[in-house]
Image 1 (cartoon, helix red, strand yellow):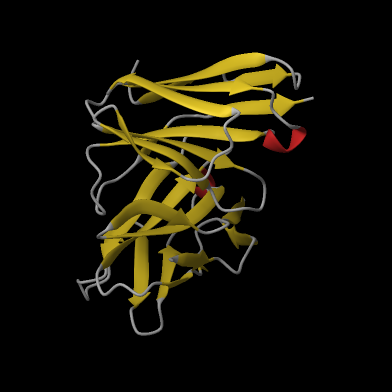
Image 2 (cartoon, rainbow over the protein chains, first blue to last red):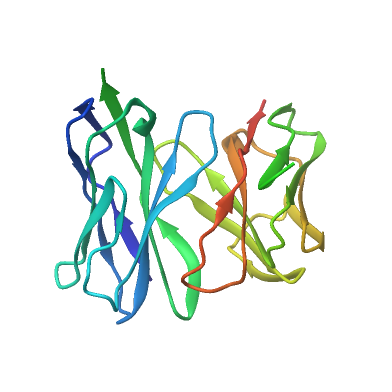
Length: 114
Length: 114
């Protein structure tokens, strides 16, 4: 069974600064996908970034990037130039071939300080 | 309407009531999901439908009864619920049941069981 651990229930960052959210996971599969989803207050959850474990290059989407360490089973999310609109719950999740359902972590609540 | 919609957004019910949650996706997707989101817990997958057929029932109590009349609509029928069933119920859809597929979430129904 897959498990996802987010050890930081809450984080805060000054506007325009950089913040890193941690995620570790456990899986016995060799190929799988990792995701970061964002759930703003009272708004719908949306995908932030996606990484296939097969690819060594870290995924990047504008101000969002990941640090994927496959051997350590670590998948952290870096948000650069933090903006007020980045305030949300961030969930790390994983799927793998043969078990295509998302397994989520407990989330990290990110606060942006103006 | 675009994306994934859910009605009602808020629901308060007694333990003897019967109610239904509705989800509709306007994305042409083939797979739909019900999740339960409780505070400080990972999202719990409840049911998965692919091309209207149920492919996953994650040991959900029978007081929750899903229905998928077509690929665009998903219902969750509720009866004789318990107070511990109070939570945010999220509907999601994806193009197919692939490990790489992004899931698109609705805004959720906030359920309170008295």
